Length: 84
Image (cartoon, rainbow, N blue to C red; front, side):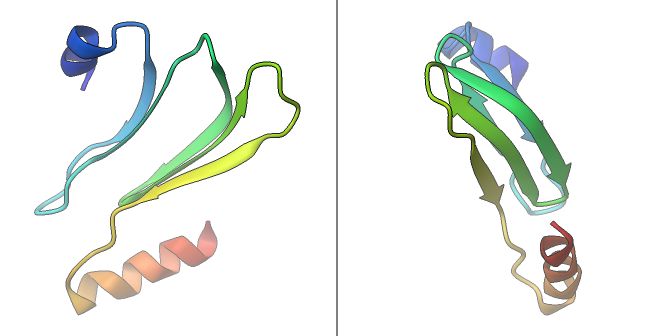
């Protein structure tokens, strides 16, 4: 991800979850000149963080989720989602 971002968006920051098995990875990108990040949590298939536009007072929680396709993986995924 670092190599790709350095080519297309060199000033952007990011948090990522690596791919696992057949599941794709997840990335949240932001321009640090426009957006502040307070915190982020990464779990398999879930990436969540608190962001705020510079000059604004409200924080927003953004989640990127890549749900599983098999029933066996779904139960663990839903347990993790409930904890979040």
